Image (tube, rainbow, N blue to C red; front, side, top):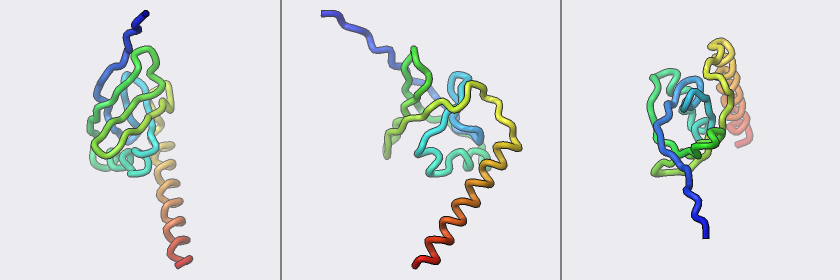
Amino acid sequence: MSHKKKELGIGMAAVTGQGLKFADLCYSSKILMKYQHFEDAQKNGEWKIPVLFLEKNLEVLIIVNFDFVDLAYVIDKRISVNEQVLDAYYEAIRNLRAQLKLAKQMLR
């Protein structure tokens, strides 16, 4: 019987205003977006979180937290993101959330 060694690594990724940065790649995750961690990092500065990864495939990171486990997917092979585009993206998200909140209040 052949035993294949799993090539799972552990590292530290930076939560930034541009996304989750690890190994010169930029990632995003459903939970980090849901809780506006990228916006928080843009306003208050970045912080590090532990991630698990497959050494031969950096397309997906595993985020393990006391409250959740989530997958982060690579969103761009390049880390540099145009700041104006990023600001417009966050503004659009804020506007959509405000509209959704208003619509929910009107339905009550």
